[in-house]
Image (tube, rainbow, N blue to C red; front, side):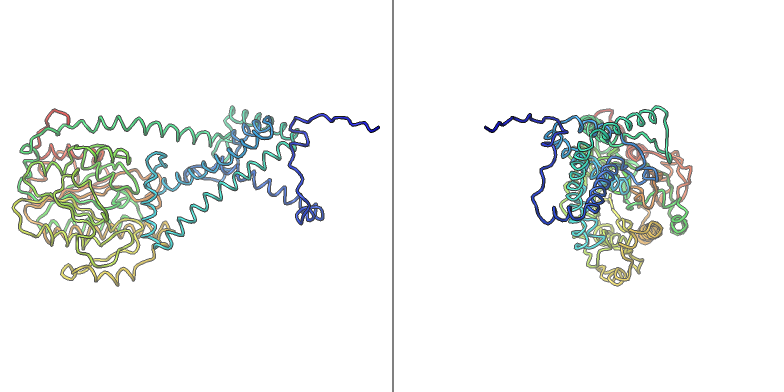
Amino acid sequence: MAVFTRQPRHTTDDAPDDTEPPAPAGRLTRWRAAHPTATRVLGRTATGLSAALVLIALLMPNTLETLGPGTFLRIPVEAIISAALLLVLPRRPRLVAAVVAGLGLAVLTALNLLDIGFNEYLGRGFNLILDWGLLDDAQSYMEDAMGRAGAVALAIGAVALVVLVCALMTLATVRLSNVLVRHRTVAVRSTLAAGVVWTLTYALGLQFAGLPIAADNAAALTEGRAERVQATLRDEAAFAREARTDAFAATPGEQLVPDLRGKDVIFTFIESYGRKAIEDPLISPGVRRTLDTSTDALTKAGFAAKSGWLTSATFGGSSWLGHSTFLSGLWIDSQQRYATVTSGDHLTLTKAFQKTGAWQTVGIMPGVQKGWPEAEFYGLDDVYDAFELGYKGPKFSWSTMPDQYTLEAFQRLVHGKKRDKPLMAEVILTSSHQPWSPLPKMVDWEDLGDGSLFGPIQKAGTNPADIIADSTRSKQEYGKSVEYSVTSLTQWLQRYGTEDTVLVFLGDHQPIVRVSGYDAGRDVPVSIVAKDPKVLDRIAGWGWSDGLRPAQDAPVWKMSDFRDRFLTAYGSTPSGKTG
């Protein structure tokens, strides 16, 4: 009689039922059996690549500035903790934990890459709540710089990269978890040893290549993002209260800017015109020469100018944040703040002129190519966008038309016409927008026509892809773009300015990191130009420099301070009330 004995069930992770079931016999199995050495080499290679992929994800910084030779030669505490956790979990929970960890590392990697991109272009990290909409703007920018086909290919590549990273990172963490369990004894000892080494190097503050050997990079970045989300949520309510506070909200129209009555006041923003344009050794010679030459030409035409510095609320891009900060007198450094203030009735500098009833208010917006409801917030009676300026020539990358044409169209459509009231205009100049390729050139003002003559100039220009990839050429072409914008504006003023013209022009932000560098700051030049000496006498106490080039030690104000200083200088009476 046969006797059958019941075998005990294995319940530990060392048991056979915790190992992967043998693969069915097939070509792969036969190949492994026939090539055991190659199988071991491939397996170890896959394990090594998996470990490298996980370490890169854990140690990757979120700025190129902090990427150095010792970045990935550190001990991440997250890896030690994760290994310890995986070693004590049963099979199924361990598999789930490994998959979740892989997906988490993929998300961390994607967010780090977004941070790197935002830091390079906007001088700040990616905001998980506010910045998703800016990805559409990035797509539009790439389409202008690379063409539609190139932009679409880049977008598809980015999505494919995210999917690939998710898949590879998950496979890597699952493989490493299986390796840990198959070699439990060695894994436990190695994890304990790594924990001891991490603790000692942390306590002693040991470093390699200027970086701490004991790293908690992933945890620190995650904590920082969580704090940023909390700060964003708190800021919304706080800023809404701040926006309702306004020293001039209840000031009657007749008490606003009385000392500028009868003047044509023009506020002009020059895209990316930052302090670097005047002070960077590779950029500044041409820009300084243009500013000095323009100052001399304006002086001969009877104009005088004073200039200072403003610290912009934005860097590298998001120009509308700089525009709204300057005009509203509020610090608007996020899309959330922008949405909050533009949905209210806060008094902007331009709206103050409208409120008086003494000015016709106009916006010249060559960069606007869709509905722009903010016109009401800014107090603009009429807005001329990219489609209403009559331009028939080619785009110059992102810029829809050259600045010289924009200003001539402003003259033809608005400034040169007979009016019952003086003019207050907001003019946006876009030719100095990145990627600074191809660039327009000055032509005879009489020949501008509908802009068709810019066709050959655009075709003969540089390739944007060549400029984007070269920091030195980016600086050179950026400098040329600023020279062009300043020349266009000052020649327009010489040509069409009158005794009653008051021009205020400034940069909206510094150019991107590739041109500015990581320590550039956010200062931009600002100038006020007029023929009537009384206009500049009103700001004599500001300490600004004579001419269009502010001195290095000229006063620096926050851009949000300008509105109240300007309104006060030209006779406006604070109401002492809130809006």
